[in-house]
Image (tube, rainbow, N blue to C red; front, top):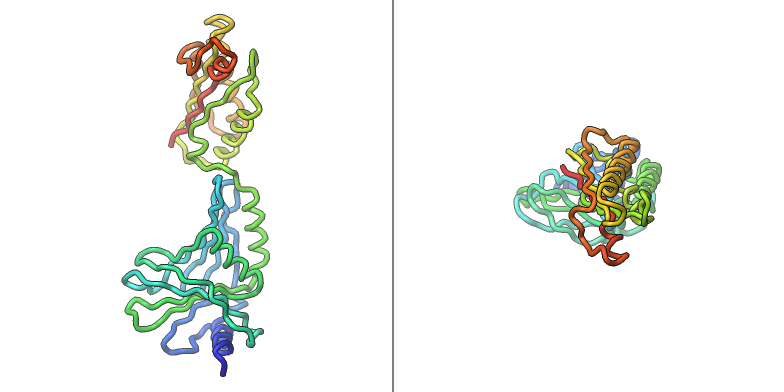
Length: 290
């Protein structure tokens, strides 16, 4: 019997019977009837796709709002080794294709008390194998190092959950909390209208905070240049700060967590002798605190 057929036979036993084919190896996988893939978080800040493996645990693909790709696969390791070791990852053909060989997907380190984890391209590799109908399978030594544990991701009911997950990924905001926690917004000359870049920035802040309630307060401090009279500039800065607050409240943010202050011509950050300097002084500083 060929090695490739042996591997496919193991996959068949895992998926269809759920019982080990080798007394020295413990196998875990959902049967086709048990297998479910569910999107458990889908919003502009987080996407999460879960697959429950009977008698083992939950495999999770996730990503969060950020400027960079951050797809993550995580699996809490059952009967994990007591010291650092290396697990092997393979793409096993489904039971109905017994003539095909398993394809190695590389190694990954395992650490005690930490999940098995893959990021970005390697996590996408797992999703690609599942989409093609193959079973990504992780194998590692057990706690005592005498036997092995193999755990497979099943393709059953994968397509719908995967499509929903990819759709969610496309709607993630391109910022995280650190990106929006401090913003400097600038205005057009002689106007209460934000510049185009600042309006885009404010839109991102509003969208983010409308989906994240884990902040304690928002401070909005507005400033002006030195043209137009000191009192008028102070009133204009107050008007600008209030306009930002009204925008955020309209997005659903609670008004009692938002404070505003207009400082007028105080605390310039650039010279008022040039148009470029005055443009920098016409600003609103928005600080979000947790």
